[in-house]
Structures are given as structure tokens and as C-alpha cells.
Length: 147
Image (cartoon, rainbow, N blue to C red; front, top):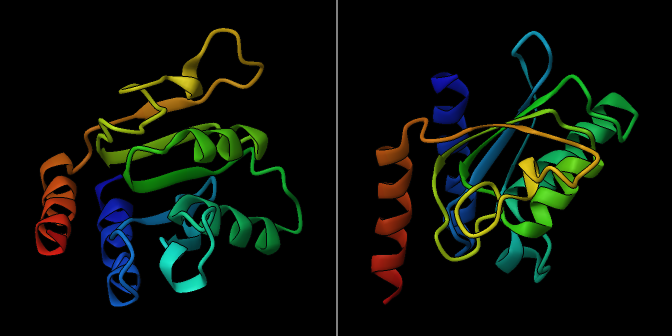
């Protein structure tokens, strides 16, 4: 799983070029092949919902011709927020892998745990801390330049 996360880290360069927070996401099919990718595009598109996960989920749905991504895995640099967690569940993605925790807005175990909430109809397997230090370092570097 480290290789796709390294790819999501690489894909975040598009975000940096546009002034967006450097978050990248990839979606893998059941064979572990990358079928879609996205990077944060909120600044680029002036779109508050253009998070890396949302961009990748939309691309995967178009690629498969279905909104049901039941055999896919989402791999992302940063823990998904509540909005992205909702999209993950609504698209039926059964597994999420991420590197860095989002202690301010995370919804996969830090601030909230929406993906594994027992009240939810759709449970998502969460694999955290994959390349945690590398992912956190990328984000810290970006924010240190913003201040």
C-alpha cells in the first residue's frame, strides 16, 4: 500500500502549483491498479468541495460508469474531512488508507470517526499512519511557507 500513497504524495504537486493545500488521492480497483486520481483544487477552481478525495471519487465514478465504487480503495495523503467521509460512504468505497492525521477537521478517527461510526449503514475499513511522517512533513512544509 505504500506505493499508491507515494503516488498520491506525488500527485499533490498539482495542488501546490495552484496554491492549494498539497493533498493527493488515488483510487485503486480490486487488483490494486490506479483507476483515478485527484489533488486538492479548491483554490484553482474556486470550489469549496474540490478536495483531492472528491476529485478522485468523481473521476473513478466516470471511469467505471457507476457511482458505486464497492470494490475500490481510496488512498490519500491526509485523513478525510467530514464532507469527504460522507462522499466515501455514499460511493460505497469499503477501504480508506491515509498517511497524516488531520487534528483539526479529520473524520476518520481524530476529531470524528464517521467512517467507522456504528450507527452508519456503511462501514469503511480505515488504515492510518501509512508513510505518516512523510505525509505530515509535506503538509508542514507547505503551511510553514504560508505563514
